[in-house]
Length: 124
Image (cartoon, rainbow, N blue to C red; front, top):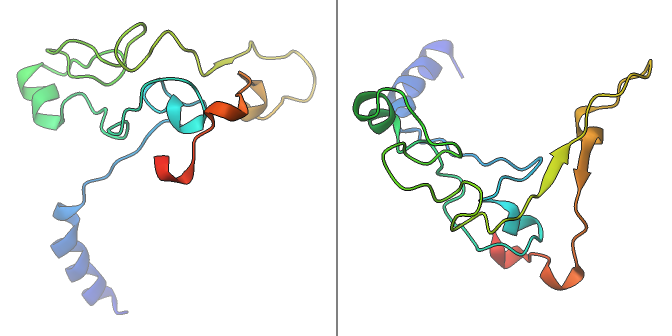
């Protein structure tokens, strides 16, 4: 593909991109159910973006709720709220002082997941 055609396609389609993402390592409170935790299902766990760009920066002057909720609404993802259910999916242990440093994922302490509560492909 020529560079000119690539530039035209990028110019046409770039404004239409609506990226989404979720925290998975360790899983956020909103996404913990996808990894076998007994928490309520938040099917919009990839939309915790402070209410959107305009709401965060124009209406709320850059403020964002603790867990990605809009600043001017009641928190739904913080501890002991609708999606959290007092559950902690993982925690990071303090860094080791050994000569060889473990990988970042090696410092994550996972809670055991019972086989009865594991998610299935239909949860995705």
